[in-house]
Image (cartoon, one colour):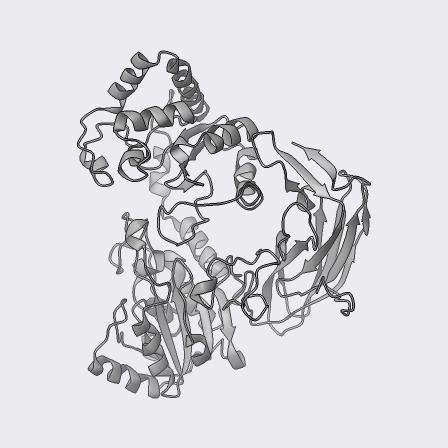
Length: 574
């Protein structure tokens, strides 16, 4: 389990930047996945590099002890992120020296293990710190015990958790388990699974005039700094900490170029990389690329980010390098139909580039076999079915507006700040029709009640495809916190042949319409406010909940929670 907790709610996008977040948002937006993981029986977890509301997580009693151990009752082993105790001195500046940093972390939290607990002046630690101390973690702990003998009980807690974890894993009987599986890494099953993941996760974001799929006899020009670079399909933490560019280190890797060669052969397209990853090109290279593009019916432009991880990946502008954007626009101006392929670990602003291309595929970081999946989708061997797991912003000022933003979030026009592509967006080569939405009840009176929702999905197109059916829930009015416009509560991915139909069913329970309140330190409690709750099927469905005269939407339904207790009913204690 990593990284506990709030790490992704970053106001700047810069690595290790501190987070300011309310208890309500922490518990209802970020806590649920961790609870699900603990409920599933995980044994270990890792804290993170940030501070939350000004307190570094590695010394944060509220998060590391009261919420993690008391409320969540996690009994597993917790480890720091790399050298994070030392960072209290070198980065957070809450401790004056290493001894004080260790003291704060041990006394204030339930951390069991310090990653990089050996000599703090070792070469490994010096990568992230400037500490010149030669004091080892062990000697520092002994010194702390001498100064405060009572700390031994706290240390014993961590010893017990560590031993229990090792016993559960069988490490005392076999200190190096899994050695027999090493030869299986990269076997045929692994390769097949990786390819399937790439196929399922690649998202068709735009497809003007049904440009995709294209015929295998089409004239195609392939270009871009990631068109023949498996490493940049993978990003950081791949083979090396910062990742690697190129193809040499990927034994199973397939670039987009190699993917096209596998699908249609090397003679079916022309390849020329006209610029580098920073967007730099020469007049000669641009002229050459434009000449190739002008002769091709389609141009596949594969662009995106350099490999990176953590602090080296910080950028001052979320916009994709302007050179890449302008390069693709120059090619589009020749009259070729541009198919834009993105490989990126974060949503880079594209300015007006989508308006200049016919189709957009987002491979995100689908890694080694992402190039093969993209090629199969371009030529129609695979029908795309991925959906956006994030909101892709259109403007830099809107990067902190998620799909579940509060209803009071408005732009200057008074409307929601429209993104480039919304959460859940994703196109297919077929069409799906939704009908016959039904709910089992419109009145809920007890926390033990449930609401069953069904909807019929029909593949009304001409080819087989996969559809992710999504159910969103909205509470239009809520007294304890401004309500969100909608929240995804259920989803199911189905496969349908052309003309086939399937009824998809979901069950909503009190856990789905309740919120954590009080937030923490008092046990985990879910409460639900007597109110109307609106169900919407599909991401783009607008139920227009504040317009009493709006026409009924067949993919919207309302149920009322009526416990007779106001403002909070249906108290659910966990």
